[in-house]
Length: 150
Image 1 (tube, rainbow, N blue to C red):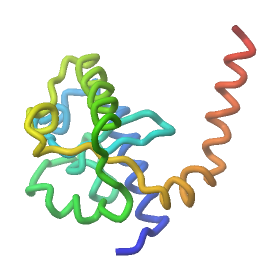
Image 2: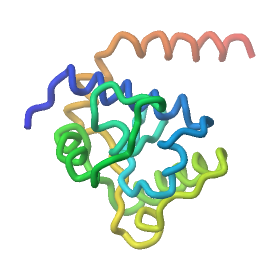
Image 3: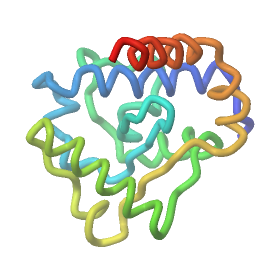
Image 4: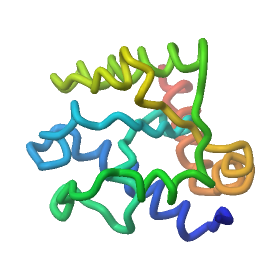
Protein backbone atom coordinates (compact mmCIF):
# COMPACT_ATOMS: atom_id res chain seq x y z
CA UNK A 1 0.00 0.00 0.00
CA UNK A 2 1.50 3.34 -0.98
CA UNK A 3 1.72 6.28 1.39
CA UNK A 4 -0.77 8.81 0.13
CA UNK A 5 -0.91 12.39 1.33
CA UNK A 6 -4.73 12.49 1.64
CA UNK A 7 -4.68 9.42 3.87
CA UNK A 8 -1.93 10.90 6.04
CA UNK A 9 -3.99 14.07 6.39
CA UNK A 10 -7.02 12.22 7.76
CA UNK A 11 -4.84 10.06 10.01
CA UNK A 12 -3.19 13.15 11.42
CA UNK A 13 -6.49 14.99 11.79
CA UNK A 14 -7.94 11.99 13.66
CA UNK A 15 -4.92 11.95 15.98
CA UNK A 16 -5.51 15.61 16.82
CA UNK A 17 -9.25 14.93 17.30
CA UNK A 18 -8.58 12.04 19.67
CA UNK A 19 -6.18 14.13 21.73
CA UNK A 20 -8.48 17.16 21.70
CA UNK A 21 -11.36 15.15 23.13
CA UNK A 22 -9.50 13.08 25.72
CA UNK A 23 -11.32 14.90 28.51
CA UNK A 24 -14.74 13.97 27.06
CA UNK A 25 -16.81 11.05 28.28
CA UNK A 26 -17.20 9.54 24.82
CA UNK A 27 -17.24 5.92 23.72
CA UNK A 28 -13.63 6.39 22.61
CA UNK A 29 -12.45 7.53 26.04
CA UNK A 30 -14.55 4.97 27.89
CA UNK A 31 -12.62 2.30 25.96
CA UNK A 32 -9.23 3.90 26.61
CA UNK A 33 -7.86 0.90 28.53
CA UNK A 34 -8.92 -1.50 25.78
CA UNK A 35 -6.67 -0.04 23.09
CA UNK A 36 -3.46 -1.98 22.63
CA UNK A 37 -2.05 -0.35 19.47
CA UNK A 38 -1.03 3.27 20.03
CA UNK A 39 0.31 5.67 17.41
CA UNK A 40 2.60 8.57 18.28
CA UNK A 41 3.01 11.87 16.43
CA UNK A 42 6.50 13.14 17.33
CA UNK A 43 6.09 16.77 16.34
CA UNK A 44 2.71 17.21 18.02
CA UNK A 45 3.76 14.92 20.91
CA UNK A 46 0.39 13.14 20.99
CA UNK A 47 -0.88 9.54 21.01
CA UNK A 48 -3.99 7.99 19.51
CA UNK A 49 -5.23 4.40 19.14
CA UNK A 50 -5.47 2.63 15.78
CA UNK A 51 -9.21 2.04 16.09
CA UNK A 52 -9.77 5.79 16.28
CA UNK A 53 -7.35 7.03 13.62
CA UNK A 54 -7.67 4.31 10.98
CA UNK A 55 -10.99 5.54 9.59
CA UNK A 56 -11.69 8.73 7.70
CA UNK A 57 -13.12 11.68 9.66
CA UNK A 58 -13.43 10.01 13.05
CA UNK A 59 -14.65 12.23 15.87
CA UNK A 60 -15.60 11.58 19.48
CA UNK A 61 -19.23 12.08 18.43
CA UNK A 62 -19.28 9.51 15.60
CA UNK A 63 -16.86 6.91 17.02
CA UNK A 64 -18.57 3.54 17.56
CA UNK A 65 -15.59 1.31 18.32
CA UNK A 66 -16.80 -1.62 16.25
CA UNK A 67 -14.43 -4.08 14.64
CA UNK A 68 -11.29 -5.83 15.79
CA UNK A 69 -8.77 -3.16 14.85
CA UNK A 70 -7.01 -5.45 12.37
CA UNK A 71 -8.39 -3.47 9.43
CA UNK A 72 -7.13 -0.18 10.81
CA UNK A 73 -3.69 -1.60 11.51
CA UNK A 74 -3.41 -2.58 7.83
CA UNK A 75 -4.45 0.94 6.76
CA UNK A 76 -1.88 2.50 9.10
CA UNK A 77 0.96 0.09 8.26
CA UNK A 78 2.48 2.14 5.38
CA UNK A 79 2.55 5.24 7.59
CA UNK A 80 3.95 3.91 10.87
CA UNK A 81 6.67 1.60 12.13
CA UNK A 82 6.58 -0.30 15.43
CA UNK A 83 9.19 0.82 17.93
CA UNK A 84 11.37 -1.36 20.12
CA UNK A 85 13.76 -1.46 23.07
CA UNK A 86 14.66 1.81 24.81
CA UNK A 87 12.53 3.94 22.53
CA UNK A 88 9.52 1.74 23.34
CA UNK A 89 10.14 2.17 27.06
CA UNK A 90 10.54 5.94 26.63
CA UNK A 91 7.28 6.30 24.68
CA UNK A 92 5.47 3.82 26.94
CA UNK A 93 6.32 6.04 29.92
CA UNK A 94 5.10 9.08 27.99
CA UNK A 95 1.87 7.23 27.09
CA UNK A 96 1.39 6.17 30.73
CA UNK A 97 1.88 9.76 31.87
CA UNK A 98 -0.60 11.00 29.25
CA UNK A 99 -3.18 8.40 30.32
CA UNK A 100 -2.67 9.10 34.03
CA UNK A 101 -3.10 12.84 33.50
CA UNK A 102 -6.69 12.12 32.45
CA UNK A 103 -7.31 9.35 34.96
CA UNK A 104 -7.07 6.54 32.38
CA UNK A 105 -5.21 3.26 32.37
CA UNK A 106 -3.66 1.64 29.31
CA UNK A 107 -4.05 -1.96 28.22
CA UNK A 108 -1.79 -4.50 29.91
CA UNK A 109 -1.13 -5.81 26.41
CA UNK A 110 0.72 -2.57 25.72
CA UNK A 111 2.30 -2.02 29.12
CA UNK A 112 3.19 -5.54 30.27
CA UNK A 113 2.74 -8.44 27.89
CA UNK A 114 4.32 -7.26 24.65
CA UNK A 115 1.16 -8.08 22.67
CA UNK A 116 0.35 -4.41 22.16
CA UNK A 117 2.49 -1.93 20.30
CA UNK A 118 3.50 1.69 20.04
CA UNK A 119 4.19 3.04 16.57
CA UNK A 120 5.75 6.20 15.17
CA UNK A 121 5.64 7.63 11.65
CA UNK A 122 7.98 6.08 9.10
CA UNK A 123 10.99 8.10 7.97
CA UNK A 124 9.21 8.62 4.62
CA UNK A 125 6.13 10.10 6.35
CA UNK A 126 8.29 12.35 8.50
CA UNK A 127 10.22 13.58 5.49
CA UNK A 128 7.29 13.93 3.05
CA UNK A 129 4.43 15.06 5.26
CA UNK A 130 5.74 16.36 8.58
CA UNK A 131 9.07 18.09 7.92
CA UNK A 132 7.77 19.71 4.72
CA UNK A 133 4.36 20.78 6.04
CA UNK A 134 4.31 24.56 6.30
CA UNK A 135 1.54 24.38 8.92
CA UNK A 136 4.17 23.27 11.43
CA UNK A 137 6.10 26.48 10.84
CA UNK A 138 3.32 28.27 12.75
CA UNK A 139 3.75 25.91 15.69
CA UNK A 140 7.49 26.48 15.69
CA UNK A 141 7.11 30.26 15.32
CA UNK A 142 4.69 30.36 18.28
CA UNK A 143 7.17 28.46 20.44
CA UNK A 144 9.92 30.94 19.54
CA UNK A 145 7.62 33.84 20.42
CA UNK A 146 6.82 32.21 23.77
CA UNK A 147 10.53 31.76 24.47
CA UNK A 148 11.17 35.42 23.76
CA UNK A 149 8.39 36.49 26.13
CA UNK A 150 9.81 34.63 29.11
